[in-house]
Image (cartoon, rainbow, N blue to C red; front, top):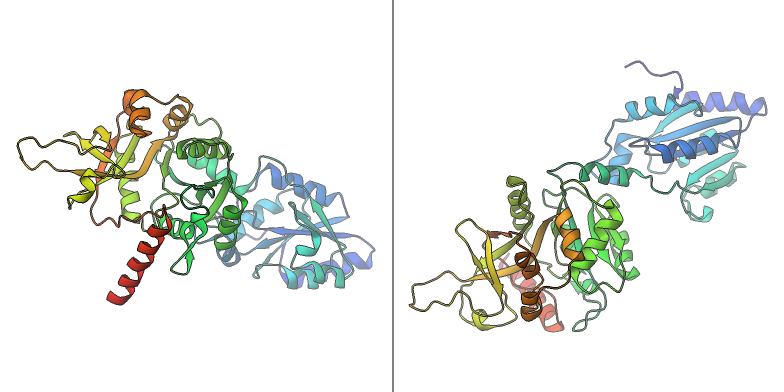
Length: 416
């Protein structure tokens, strides 16, 4: 592909800029990844162009995008992105830069106006000092609501019947252990453990953390890039994790009309195994009629069988849940050695069923057992059950659970 005449090297753009400034023409500069060009970008560029005589667009190189956005980006290579930008009538020149922030390019170009799109404060920009030292002004242009590269990727995923995303409900105000998603475990927060496990799965990225607390949102923003994980703020009034999950799905994807697999990974499960999450995704992909799936593991010892906090499940020959209960089921009357299965609280949903389920009132058996999944069974929805082994049965519900988790990590370290 021949280089478009508007695409300049840094040396070319510097010489060109000098000639324009000598003629007293005002140069406007803006920059970005422009990974998927959309209406929000075009509006930004058009408004930027109106501020001066020429608009120069700085474009992050492929290597720069990968450092900023993760290995899955950019979607399109730098020369293709540059050519699309160059085709716009409001763009006068495009220059590709290797650094993460175009400080060197700005120092070379010395624009009269440097434009950024978003809700930045000018003084927060790392390039602010360079712009001002070279006689420039910073102008912030608000983003166009409803348009972003991340949102475009999410919409694309929601139209792919094989797409799977992970949502992690994380509530700060736990009655038994307030703030548990943020407590430290092995040098990182519990919620960070969960997100890092989710990032190792076949699900698309980013991982979404559905939370009602800005402190959890800040933790996600601080520890992960927006292409790895993203907080979705939900109402404190959500009564259950399912309600919070459904609200987050509506916020990110609207009223979903096509099949989208949503995996609900609890925010207090720091030892969740990525392969187990993948088993759920595979089960949903193998049967496009399956609306819901979950995990179970064999009960190897006697004590959890009678513990009402350990939920049991009975599974049919087809791998479908027959019933969930806090009671010891099935009752092995004649001692035939029936397999006892412990239910693990991770689910995969067809997003359409998830939204419908959240809109339904609690069912009778659900209220008796205090188990939300019974709502699905009582409405005739099959729940696929994947049986997995080698489960670490430590969820962080109480300070005692945290102590057990810390002891488990110490044992792993000693054994390793």
